[in-house]
Amino acid sequence: MAYQGQCACGAVTATISAEPVTVRQCWCRDCQRISGGGPTNNAIFPVEAVVVEGELGSHGHTAASGNTLTKHFCAQCGTPVYATSSARMHLQTFRLGFLADGHGLKPSAAIWTNSAPDWAHIDPALEQWVAQPPAPVMPQD
Image (cartoon, rainbow, N blue to C red):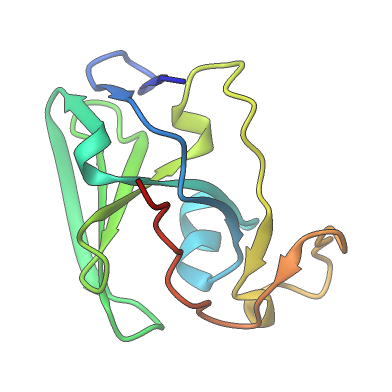
């Protein structure tokens, strides 16, 4: 299945020609900041399956994991598009909200749950990690 996505103004688009390696809900403080207080919901794809068009801005910083996390966003409207980690440059983490309606993806795990606020509701059916989980396993060809 191919996934499509675009930012709020339409200046940045993406076509993704692979299934995600994993889909996660992240409760780290960085994600809470960019989401307005809740988690982000993210699909992780191999970089070679992704084509992004349009002007991106970016911002990098040292994340709680100790890795450099670079967030890429539309330079026009600021919509979050994807993030990369210095520890996993072969992967791009796309925000589910960037993907077109009907993508059908949903998180299978919640990560950085120790950073979630007391009022957070974390689905007990999800696999849960209190901090950084192991790297996602790449599918074998």
